[in-house]
Image (tube, rainbow, N blue to C red; front, side, top):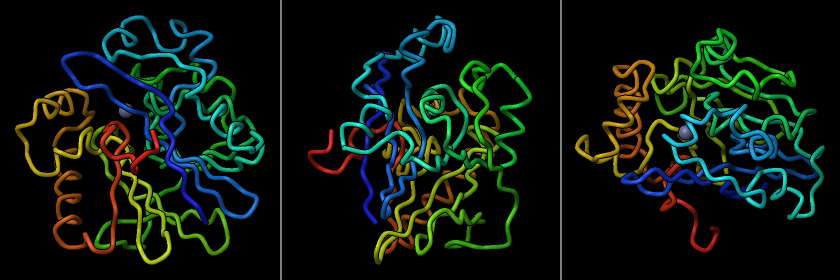
Length: 253
Ligand SMILES: [Zn+2]
């Protein structure tokens, strides 16, 4: 199994630092699993319709075709249809934009997040889901992963992948844990924007995180669980977030 780290988009709204869209492409034999989908080809063709002028300006969306997951999958010599499964941390516009570029993939998400997406609450872009994703919604589980609930995704034989509820940013927001050799990689989605939030509540980005949270008490509880994992299990778990450019392995972006 090989994990590729892809930056599938750029958001830049000064004074916030330039933000990445850090997706994972998990390669296992002939199959690919994509974790989050970044800004997609359809977003680039129809930005205002799909994202809205207000959000484009507020979040600083940039549109670069070569950064889309679809183009990066092709550039590595794979076919779009090789992406059999997508794991979505949550349905925000900067995470779900590429879904339509992989129409045959099964899309794994928590039941809570799918309910939120289907409630048309205004946070999400209905256009980004209008193609009819092949949803696979995963509900509560008794499995535990380092003390947290873990919802097993039986995607590829011999490859352990879990949805790990880290609610708060959105009502069904999850991290994605992947067993990679001896260690675990936890993609935390937007449970933090910048890794600095693991060590302080006073970073300027913390105010933005609180403002964007659907349930800020839950968001803070999830963040404190991540801090516990860092304190107690740093030797077993690597962590990456979606928006911190500093978290790409050296030379990958
Ligand atoms: Zn985001």
